[in-house]
Amino acid sequence: MTKRNDLARYEQIALILAKDITKGVYNEGEKISGRSTLASKYSVSPETIRKALALLRSKEVVEVIPNSGTIILSRSAAEHFIDSFEEHSALEFMERKLRELTKERDRLNLEIKNLVKEIVNFKAGMLINMQDAEEIPVKPNSPLVGKSVHEARLRSVTGVTVTAVKHRGRWYVSPGKELELTIGDTLLAMGTPEAIEHLRQLAAGAGKIVNA
Image 1 (cartoon, helix red, strand yellow):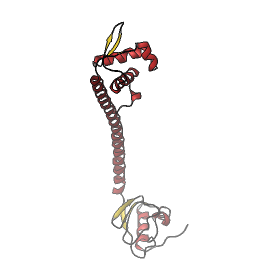
Image 2 (cartoon, one colour):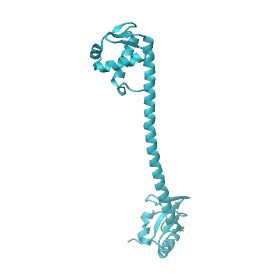
Image 3 (tube, helix red, strand yellow):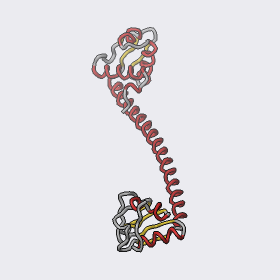
Image 4 (cartoon, helix red, strand yellow):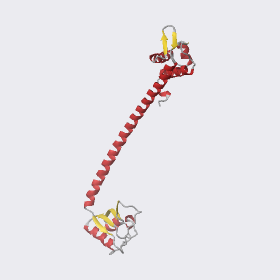
């Protein structure tokens, strides 16, 4: 529900007066103090009191008699005013919250859309590169077994770029230090024919890694 601070000051005063009527602070038929006195009591301006009384008058809670004063008409009307006003305020709060959430949703949707576009573009570029890549299986007795691509320094040793590794049936793009090669893994590599052949020999166990 809307907090009282979200209301205009005259609306706050109207609610306070209506609640005072329902509590018996003011009785039906009673003539209440003038605007100046009420303004002093509630620490607001006489104009704020005038607006508050006008609002209550429109709901038949009070009757404002010019140059005479304000008469309390109905406690039940005051109760109805409080209920309907708070329901209306709650609806306004929910509608405002909905607008805020919708705005946030639209922002997130745009962010998701842009991210999806980036992923699609990245994958498209990766697929273009993979079309020219060679698949090289890691055989038994290969010095690559038990080493990561990084640890084996395949780029500096052979001149190839390993873009992905198929490890235990799953492809890992840009494999890191934690992925140790095992027998049966497949290296997806790019490079010159000579570099690819060098890597193929290492993966087949026909060569060894020479430390720089």
